[in-house]
Length: 91
Figure: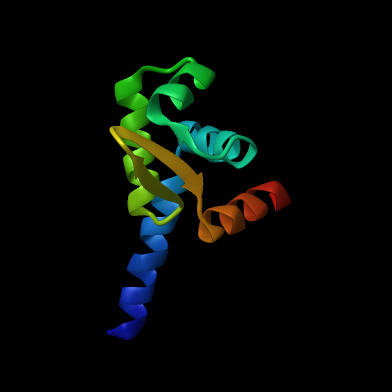
């Protein structure tokens, strides 16, 4: 029973990065921490709604943190996110 829980945990993380756009977002946030959805959207030239959805999935996977500053939400890569990025660079 416990191993199955670990597999589901890993699945959530892997699904978090199983998209080229999410990988782009992670690498952008690594170079430019503290970006809002709007700034990520502008930098990648992708619609706000699309970026918001991808950031939500990255946050749910534990790869990105959200911090509220007034009405703005800024995002940063977590340690787990940095570890995944290291793995991606090795591939």
